[in-house]
Image 1 (spheres, rainbow, N blue to C red):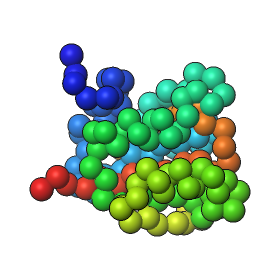
Image 2 (cartoon, helix red, strand yellow; image 1 turned 90 degrees about the vertical axis):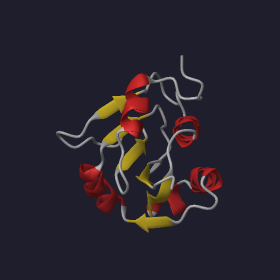
Image 3 (cartoon, rainbow, N blue to C red; image 1 turned 90 degrees about the horizontal axis):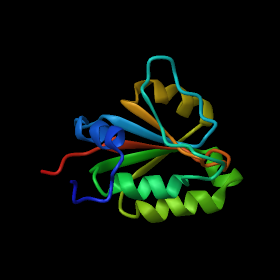
Image 4 (cartoon, rainbow, N blue to C red; image 1 turned 45 degrees about the vertical axis):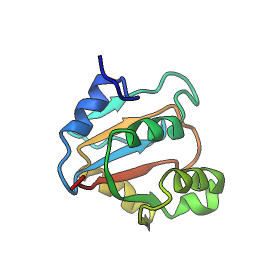
Length: 131
């Protein structure tokens, strides 16, 4: 049995397959998933699991070089933005428009759908290296 926090086998597998610069998106319940992009659907009910819970679990296994959020998050959901920033305090961030963010998801190795129902609560994590 694994010793680390993350138990979901599909999510753990997706992280293990990442190379430098690859991206995983942790998404709210409403973010569209582009055709052909794998979706790891963790959503159970509204708010379960929360994006921040999934983010914490992913960060226990993934080396993150930078992250990307929608610019709209700052105005529409500032408390969620603050929680994301607090989870990634030393990691550089990029803010792009929500439309650009949706287009960016086509490049993701996987999209992780949560039960989060906060507007614009999506974060793209770009893999770094551990050496």
